[in-house]
Image (cartoon, helix red, strand yellow):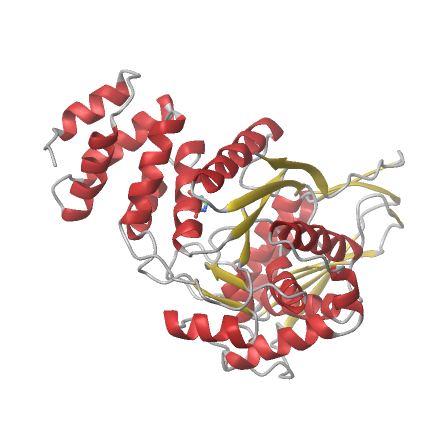
Length: 426
Ligand code: URA
């Protein structure tokens, strides 16, 4: 393989040129070997941030990220594999319900997940509030559980697209996270390396989402769908609204409890409907013609959930933690709820202790918020809007303060916004 100069690669992209496939491959490989320095890769990331990558460059960049590590081999399982990835939202506990539900319909769901950072919670943090449950599984354990139970939610191993971890750490400290080619290649390299046959992307848009504008969310969705399809993974994206929290519970144990409610045929309607819509798309991609609603209502999805938790050492009947310090937040006046800002509620839950500021911070299992009213409902002055849980008074006060701007009350009736906004396929 030819040798390139890192400075030439950087200046080509800085000046708006296109990088050759060899140059991209060399740059990522040399970075992994230690022959390209962090500051040089940071400069290239900034040049990509401003000038983008064309479809061919993005495909090569993503291929090389995948080739930086191992690929999980899920061939030979008796069921087709299908996964879901969400770009992250407030109260987004869908994976906990969706993985066992889709497994109950006959597919295998390998959900390799992450921990939360900032105001959106991580699926692993939620499941870790279940006593005994473990997130770390070997590749063999993942395969066995997919065959035996049909669903696994576990930590993405260090071996999948390892260059992404290093690039993400650089992007985090250089203001280059919010780039569509960099986000797409980061997410899709890990999902493609995971070895799933099919993938549904839940791209959140709105106040509590990572991406606030509809146009950018659409562009991200289209880019990821193309990358998946070009790599032989049947991929569809759904653009979904994240203006108010999803469901009522925001916080680790609280979200597990709400997920179990939905798995038992109850729970908030928006959580149930979004789960069913994602499940239908996943099943369609792998050619399974089963109505997932029937599997929620007849208890079979809940049965798979219990088996999935037990297979990873968890006790599905265990009492979950609840923050010992509680408070309620009251409506300051009469009115119809015009807005319940998902970002404010997410930040409040984080400050109550449910989230972490740095990767290595612990999270509280029992901290969080229960939203007692929804957008469009009429509330009276003094009526409780939120129930707050924390492990101490200091966290409780911090979370409470953040909620002050979360709710806007008014006199106008509110037009109901659907959760599912758009479907994107290639
Ligand atoms: N999630 C990822 O895995 N990567 C990104 O770049 C952004 C969100």
